[in-house]
Image 1 (cartoon, one colour):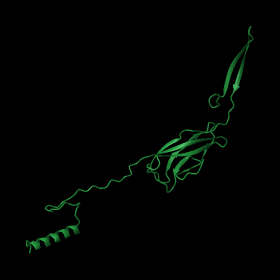
Image 2 (image 1 turned 45 degrees about the vertical axis):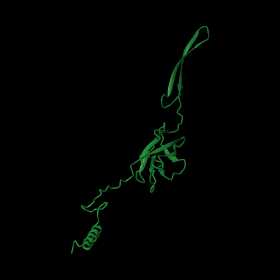
Image 3 (image 1 turned 60 degrees about the horizontal axis):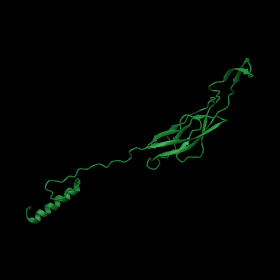
Image 4 (image 1 turned 135 degrees about the vertical axis):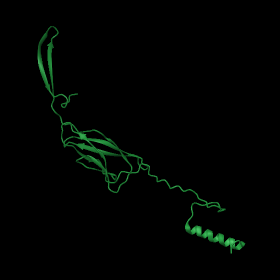
Length: 179
């Protein structure tokens, strides 16, 4: 395959043969003309944590044009999750949007790179990585006051303790142990 960006000219020496004798050698030069080629994406897979802030850049596309022309980008269809900067190729999470690994582990976008003449469309995949988003409940140590005689409880409130003491005093008075 001829590629202008690799080799622009080939020089050959050709000698004819008529079946009886060789003819004189002739030099031939083949010049490859530059054809406009479409931009080429350098990467189409990206990864982002599910707790990324709304509005954050989650991927930076890069498409290289073989002829060095400026490249612009466009989405094949509008996204409800991401927006694309057509000049820089930056993909950002839309304001007010959050990612959730448990709902969607990846998102695909059809993106076209253009050099003004030629285009190349690729499927760009943004993988969402899981973040531990469960908040552990605080652990409590059951406490049972000495001589409570009960089945125990989780902690004591001041009001609960006061109510217990009043009920015990009342019970003791009824038994004649306290005057």
